[in-house]
Length: 143
Image 1 (tube, rainbow, N blue to C red):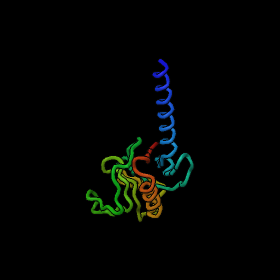
Image 2: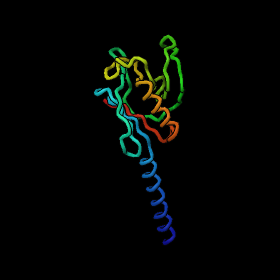
Image 3: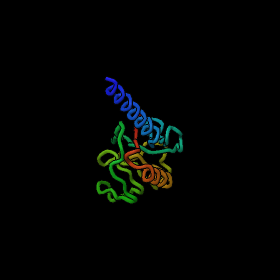
Image 4: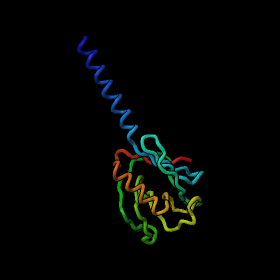
């Protein structure tokens, strides 16, 4: 009986420590569609807050939480006339966070559904995700 209690107690300590550490070590990129902003947090501390552009009328930026699925330093959209998508972080099907040259449109809906950032900010986020790891990164898109 003592062995079982001891094993359960040790497992509980390992599990709770692992979960707390994994949550604390995560990188979170939280997109607010209503505010057209992205807040980047590491271990609960805000690192960056940037203006973004999400889907314009007739398109949608899906809401939810994901881990990055794939990353490309430069991607060209086959769907939209080979448009450049620098520092792309794909998180849900063809939806990605990526840089844009249309910086005058940041802060308001303007995309086909992706989350657009100033290219220098997309480069920073891309580097953070590479460093911390896609498995330790969450992308959260809210209203």
